[in-house]
Length: 267
Image (cartoon, rainbow, N blue to C red; front, side, top):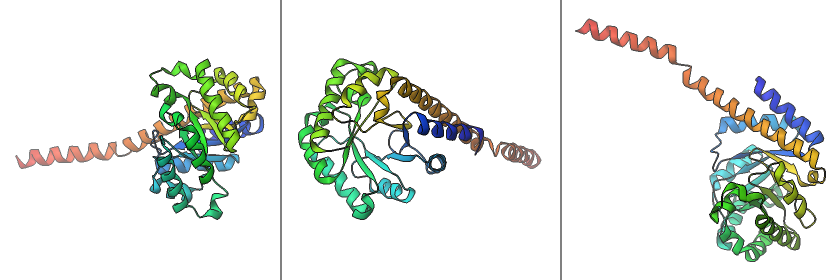
């Protein structure tokens, strides 16, 4: 492990012990996580004793589901599922890839991240119950789907939407995760829906046990650790690919010089 990764490991160990950190997250979707990046994240997570969440590319991303099974993902999230039919496609895909006995060890979820999904919420919940999948409320994309900016995520109106999803998940006994712009400013909203149903909340790279919001100071500290973790992750990724991009520079310079010399000699 390099110095970035050692610090990331220390953050996860500290956060697991004191701040409710339960998992790290990668995305095949918007983040475009590559295999070598995922392997580094998996090693850090396994050493820290936390789980791994992966967002796949869509409702029927079978190849992504196969890779999730290969790498041992603990949580799998499917994005942009806006109709009950799309949700049935996701359920059929995960049932195709994962034997029923293995599904007991994996939590499958889908994103509630547009107003259209919300408008089908009751029907979606019934399909989700039959298909054994939970929900992730993605507040930033949900706000964007209604033409709002990012600062809408902690508004009173957003609280109402999240509360409605929380109540539906309570009534159907479905797991609920809230993400999208999570920061210390989100703690009042998260706390308000916890009595109905909230299992976890997540930043871009880190997933927390929802009960930690009962102690706002501890939850806020955990979010600060998550911010540092993501920054370290991005720096580590940048340096890794910069090293790859530059590793052949000396050879390229030498070959270009040889080419120029050969051209002169031929002239």
